[in-house]
Image (cartoon, rainbow, N blue to C red; front, side):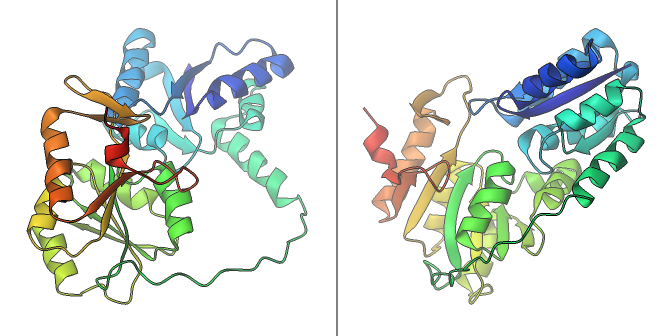
Length: 295
């Protein structure tokens, strides 16, 4: 029996290493590292390779770091195909120590929860800034291209920074993907509304002012979708190219952004329509125009 442990960066490896210092042999934990250059499909492939090598029937669970993060989302398709594998969020050293000490997974999760529940931390007084006015009258506060759609960066960092109260995912293909829709619903932060719409329906509803007065975070996963929405009359001043993974036929534009010649043509068409295109992976990154990265 074994567990796949997976996380952003080298966190999974670190948890395993720390657990080994305390409990000894940790061969029951197989780490998968997710890097910024990887796509969700890359992570799925890693899982499939481990299951093929070690036996899917022997895998007890996939333990990811964040609910809604790419390592977690990539596992949803795997667990739907292998009913014996459980999917858990909240990877930690303490969880691995308990499992490796002989605790059942459910009991280990309960004990980790008790640790936090019994910890008393004084709350700090925090000043909440009033949200800025939406960039557009249609409610859009950010129009982002992200091939992973809703994941850790989007759910925990961008949505909070933008103070968005609605995420709109505009894509024709995801509507046909039952598991993909489930993953998006699971990844949405508490208190934030989610609309998963076809490209034409999203453009029509935004153009009609259906979300006026809301703070809309519009997310797509293809450059042609941006071009299509702009050409359909969507009023938007700027678009953010946030994440496009490394794939065959693409060239590197910047960290975490790779494009084909056709995708670059889409971006150019959007710019010619008077829309500023910039590239910013996370809110703390410098906001620079997409064109400034082209050589």
